[in-house]
Length: 492
Image (tube, rainbow, N blue to C red):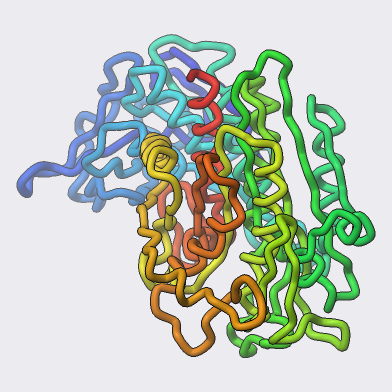
């Protein structure tokens, strides 16, 4: 995990010593020329005579233009486009974009119009997120940029020593998800994820329980066992608990943790199997959110259920037509072994329900139908009306795109089985695939417990060019929303 050293400073931009001084540029209205955005500290005149049009600086989001130092103590200047936004999302994006595009700068000073505590925090968070780099699998021949020990300073009207604490913890949570998801599946099986969780808990007020295959059998977790029985690396259920004594609310988080998804005996085509190391993103997300809650000292109980298995074909794998009994006693006819995520989630959600938490949120890279419906950046959201509304609000507050989807009653008929309580998929009928998965999952939440389902199949991985603070690879999507949800619950 790579994160810069974060700080704030109230000095004038011209007197800051840094490798790069980053200054914001706003696009002109109605075709007018772009303009320099005044930093939040003191008036800044060093660039008054700069012809922005001549150097191609338009103020467009993500545009970074480097120029020599003029009238400042910094070694160079970078102009970052702010776009038209003036809220926290705009400054989080601009700060993150600048840091992402300056991988070789040892020290960066961000002289943006961050004139409130909320905007300063957003810029610090964006900067930390933008500095992410994954290097675990880089070899001796690597010639690309390395982050090293970067230092990032955000100029603010008043410098606070603790201003960077929360942004750093939030960024670390996102980086933890990205590190785990970017790791090759051969290096990260179910037990490896359990080991990571145990190590993270060693210095925090967290407890970790790891259920191996024998314990899963004894306690009736037929979904996790059924999905994992085809792999040489057996499944695990990891339960991570953060339970401050004064907490009055309990948030349960359930994460799909398929460390590699071949499709099982319903084998995926070769092209579709690429990238399936990311199918454990849900488990990584709920783990990271719980770790962050503990590091922030939130006054809310958080329990993460990591349902971990590797979905592989073999002579011991679950067959289409087999019937599994899940944790709540309901039976499932497996019509498609590649619809495995809902089976492990069903076990986790049923177990979470036994503790009657105030809310259950499950997170999963669950369906290709989510990508078809909502694309690569917007998370699908389903569940109880009040919790859905709350999640929409907190997601908007941290600028994570999300959209509610229905759970139509007529889909219940498609889950009917001739031999069991339900099927796990309707082979040959792809209509409403994201919604059908949601209808399946709601059967594993006890009545009266608020529940929400987050399908992050598309947003969990970014495959295109960089934007804002985000580069290629795992995104850490929804971890910031879950942290914000936990913070919101503690205030109720």
